[in-house]
Amino acid sequence: MNKIMEFQVFRKTPDRKLPSPGYKKIPCHMIYDVTFDGRRKARFDAGGHLADDPGEDVDAGVVAPEAVRLRMLAVVHDDLQVVATDIGNASLHAKTGEKLYTILGEEYGELSGVVLTSEKGLLGFKEFRCKIS
Image (cartoon, rainbow, N blue to C red; front, side, top):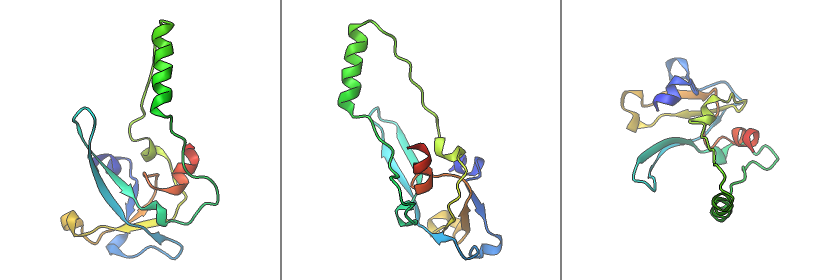
């Protein structure tokens, strides 16, 4: 949540007013997980499945674990080096044209009822998935 605030993914509407017509309400929720190495992770996810369909394939391809294992076998066999990287919070850097908003629930304490409009990409936004696929 700190990164979402830092990257200004959402804009708070004044006085908890609903945004202008043309914005679509979507639910947002926290997803908690434990990684394979025991670390605890959480992410704020948008219910983008409720946003309008952009009319094109919106899912990015994923490499199958078997393909990674085969490639690593070739790396070891040929005595090659492997270089890898990860861009943390990649979606939070992308501007979005999607007109979406959410209203924070009572689990957000004093922020309960605050109306947030989308400014940047968030996991679950369809337009963001189109841009990276």
